[in-house]
Length: 254
Image 1 (tube, rainbow, N blue to C red):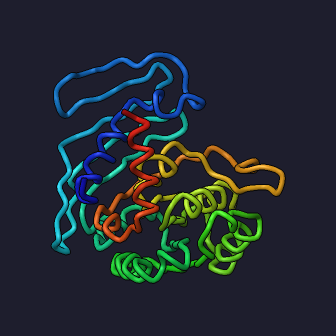
Image 2: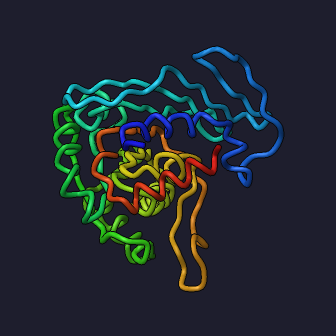
Image 3: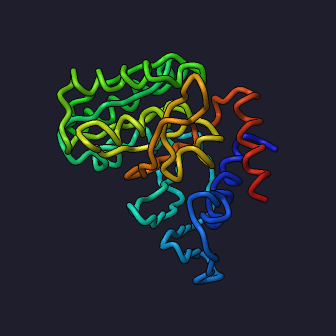
C-alpha cells in the first residue's frame, strides 16, 4: 500500500469513536448520530468526532483543506484539518495565533525540512515568530528538553495570547504540549504532526509529558490542542521505520 493511501487510512482511523481509541480517557457508550457522510460519533462523555469528505493527496503547492474532524472534548472543542500543503497556508496558520507572537518547537530531523516553511507562513500573516530546535529521539524526552522550550518562551517574552506550535512527531508534541500547559499557566497549543503515528495517536487526545529516569511518561498533563493541522505532504518524507509504526497503530484501530 502506498504512503499516499495511508493518509486516507489515517483519516479513517481518526474517525473511529474517541472512546474506542482512548479508553483510559473516556467511559460510556458511543452513539452514532448519523450514518451518512458527513457523519458524527457522539460520546456520553461529551467527546465527539465529526468527519467530512475523503482525503486525496496532491503534488501541487496550493494549500487545500480536504477533510475535517471536530473534537468536542470536555475541556476544549477543536478541529483536526487534513489537506495538502497546509504548512504553506499563511491565512490558516495565522488564524491559529490570537496574539502577535508564535513559537515553533521542532527537532533536528524535521526542522531542516519544514521549519522555514512554517515560519514564512506565519510571518506573512503578520506574526512575530520564534523557534526552538530540540535533539531528535525518545531519549531526549526529558526535563532538560522541556526547560529548553520554556527558555525559548521566556526569551521571546510570550504572553497568554501567544501560541506554541509543535512541528514534528510524538516526542515533539508531548514536550511542546506540556510546555504550553504550564507556561504562564497555559497558552494556545497547535499540533503540526509530521509522522503517521503522531497523526493517528499522539497529536490527538491531549496527552502531554516527559519521561522520568524511573518511568516513561510519568510527568505530564492532559492538555488539548486548539487545533491539529495535518499536512499530508509531510507523510511522503517518512522513513520505513516511522511509516511502519504508523501503519501498526492504524491496524490496531481496525
